[in-house]
Image (cartoon, rainbow, N blue to C red; front, side, top):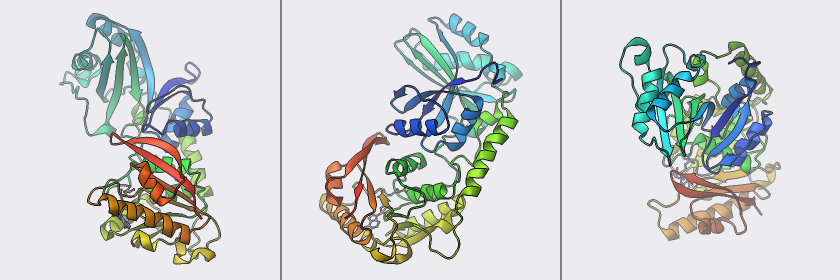
Length: 395
Ligand SMILES: C[S@@+](CC[C@H](N)C(=O)[O-])C[C@H]1O[C@@H](n2cnc3c(N)ncnc32)[C@H](O)[C@@H]1O
């Protein structure tokens, strides 16, 4: 990949459905010009430098695919010829094990497995070393394999190479989970769409494994989301170490410019849950993320919600954000859920007047128990289920 010969790469950024506009905003912040939005996708042309930066800095994305080929074929013979014409050596190092994700729609070649086999025969280690070729679509060791995404619609094939490796929401710190954890990318999207300022306080009174609070603390600390993890692009034969070093240096600057907690004032981010096991998981995750000193952990019910420092409303002048993902059901019945949501709204308004509030709910009617007049900021799909992020102002 020579930046003079190929100044930009046509890319597709994949994200959880509902976060497309936030991803587009993040791309603009990197100096790129996002194009078409699809469900869970944003197209964009990226220079090599911005491709690296996108992987390092996008908080709401799942992966970045680079389109490396496009052609129309209706027979396997033509498909094999087209695969053979592509410049794979620019991307795949000799020891790379490719794996393929194939989808087809309205196409003469419709058998996903047979299509993957043609790619594997041309690109797999078997084609280079004589060993057998793995065409499985779901190898778990994503970091050491190279995902190639093949999509055929109306006989038009698009071939993309994944630059990310393991999904970008897998930042590496969340190993302990509580009930129904959010993806890190979704938690980050909630914070962005609520307009949370990383210098303002934040309370998650039902934090579970701490995802919202830890994503907030990482932002406050200026830690780029993909800091310290493997990326598939680093294994490419066309990988540019100099460009990478320069992009990483930007990340280092971001970190060094973040305000360091001075050790005197209390942390401005609170993660609370009534379940001691959840708080233990949240604390262990925060330690792995390197931000435990930025978060105050509390085993407490929502009725005991308080702003950071444990002080009353008058001693915390800067308005912050109460951001939370309450239970959606489970063992709690309708009446108990309504009470829980109403308690959240009442106590938050008493303790944090003037603050913003954001609740992630499955049922908009329940959000009205928290507070009437909340505005829907995001319409998401989580685990195939619709979810709504509503925000408003307290008291
Ligand atoms: C959906 S989970 C939150 C998941 C979290 N966002 C994450 O990423 O791990 C809801 C949490 O609310 C907590 N919870 C339920 N009722 C509560 C109450 N009355 N007070 C405080 N926490 C409560 C549960 O223990 C659970 O951890």
